Amino acid sequence: MRIYKVGGAVRDRLLGIPVTDIDWVVVGATTEEMLAKGFRPVGADFPVFLHPKSGEEYALARTERKSGRGYGGFTFHASPEVTLEEDLIRRDLTINAMAEDDQQNLTDPYHGQRDLEARLLRHVSPAFAEDPLRVLRVARFAARYAALGFTVAPETLELMRQLSESGELEALTPERSWKEISRALMEDQPQVFIEVLRACGALKVLMPEVDALFGVPQPPAHHPEIDTGAHTLSVLEQAALHKQPLTVRWACLLHDLGKGLTPEEEWPRHIAHEFKGLKLIKAVNERFKAPRDCQELAMLVGEYHTHGHRALELKPSTLLELLQSFDIYRRPHRFEEFIAACEMDARGREGLEQRSYPQADYLRGAATAARSIAVQPLLEKGFKGPELGEAIKRERLKALKAYKEQV
Ligand code: CTP
Image (cartoon, rainbow, N blue to C red; front, side, top):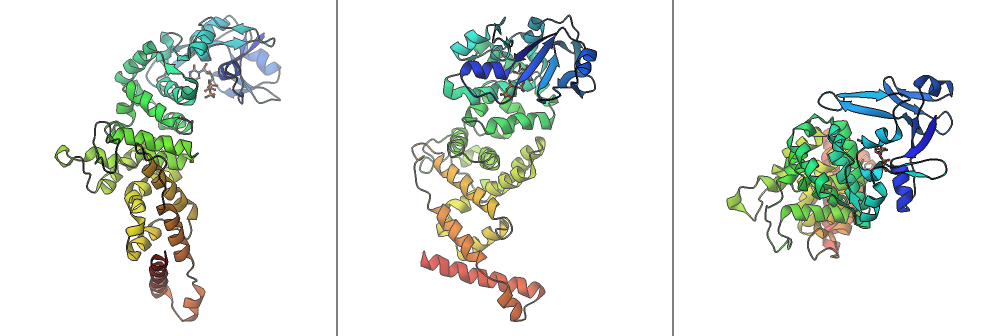
């Protein structure tokens, strides 16, 4: 039995990046031998085991063949005869298809090291096409390693284009897609993920609502970059630069979907795009079964982001409606995330990246004013039920009027 480190651990060590997860491949062993050594099997018919002490993944060297559509459509062949080279050739990228023994001797039959140096994300073999999720994986690696100068090799992009056109992407489960999307959005340059998906035609399949934003103009006075797709990418870029959480990044990506629905004769204006976009945001949310906090924030940011920008001009009653919609009394954190998304939207515009955003503090101040209303004195005055609700609202409105006058 020979054991090798494989995949990301080898790649990242060679890149000088800290390694967090280690995957191992075991050559020349049977399932029975692994079990006898105390390894715990991961799945019933998957030749992967967890180390009894470290908990790291050890996979028997295997070959894979696609036998049908989707992720279920695989047959595995794991046996002691499968060689390391045979295992490596079915992997996605050359930089992920290197192995290392305990002496750090590298096995690199598909020239991963050369591609690391050339900064190229290149597929190992036609077996790449056996798992369509790899289209998203490559885009995610492009986002992660963009700062190091990595790009997708033209022949790999071509293969990704063929896969996107083949209808295979539709067979991906929402869970697998979301895992890739959410990881990619948390990379340092998430906009590159979207760019690569667009370049190979996958964006049109996965998120046609986002793809439709490219080529749609906006008024140059507010949007010097003009193109709505370019703006969306810049907003995402700002969100990453400002280390925003996933919820905010997801909301940034989807905030302007309504602009893709504007009839051309109305361009470059987008009347009521906030409201029109909601059904599209809902559809994308549901397509990937995004977690509830991501779904909720995306809908709220979609509906109210222009309220955020106009915060200082809003009437106290509109301001109160905004605060109520966010349920700022029970969900203060969500309102902070809304403010952050609005700020990223304001900065994600050509030449305006450094602008100040006084709306942020103004909105925080308004929330504090509305929250300052205590219920107890109203109860003591005898208000109950719906009347109590009305009285609280009146007091909050008064507080907001005073706040607006004082700022
Ligand atoms: N792999 C693959 N195709 C997939 C998933 C994984 O070929 N769809 C292979 C690659 O060789 C990869 C290894 O399995 O390097 C481990 O996969 P995973 O842990 O998902 O990714 P890492 O490459 O370790 O990258 P990350 O740093 O993102 O975890």
